Amino acid sequence: MSYLGNADYQRLYLEGAKSAGTEHGTYAGLLTVDNEQSISVNVATMYGQVKVSVELQAKAPAVDSSWDDIAEISLLKTAGDVVTLVNGSGDEIEEPETLIGEDMRGNFRIRIHRSGQGFDEGEEPTSYEDPRTERLLLIVWPSPQVLEPTVIQMNSASARETQEWSETHESDEGWHAESDMDPDELAQIERNLRQVE
Image (cartoon, rainbow, N blue to C red; front, side, top):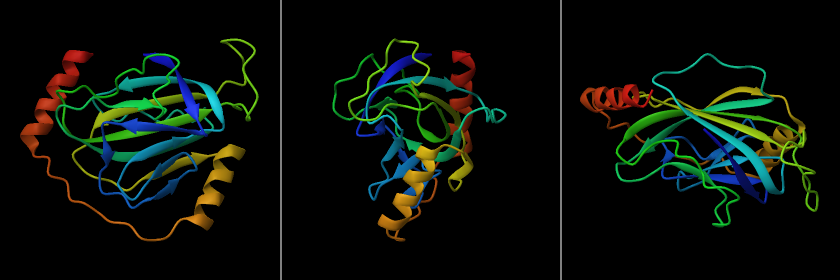
């Protein structure tokens, strides 16, 4: 499933889930966890379109290293919320696709991939298929174990600049939370995922 996201000041925001016990900070220049455990996805495009694809998997897929930047983080999602990637201003280009449905809850892992040059402030794509348009791929799967963020690769200039900036402007304070997901909840999530496939 895919849609056109609308970057706002070089960010999109994961709505409906929080980081599962990760210290605040920036990882691979690609994702940032704030003091309230909210997660933002950092992009090169200042304002405007970003192609976003989302996948819900039953387990962690093999890594596709053809992307410029890749990072993973653990999520905590409660029942009743829908997890989407939004721009935070409410002026979406297209309706965001759902990453995790409202009936699912517990701990998940998300792998975020990013490629593409993006657009500076004042620049716009020449068409829907403009090769400079940034692309994001978000893959989510159930993961009862809360793991530290993983930087898989960071190859783009944009990600390196974001990471360098964050390392000079963020403090070292953070906190960790324990996972409360039991095996029965995980089994139910896995049954729900099989129905989706």
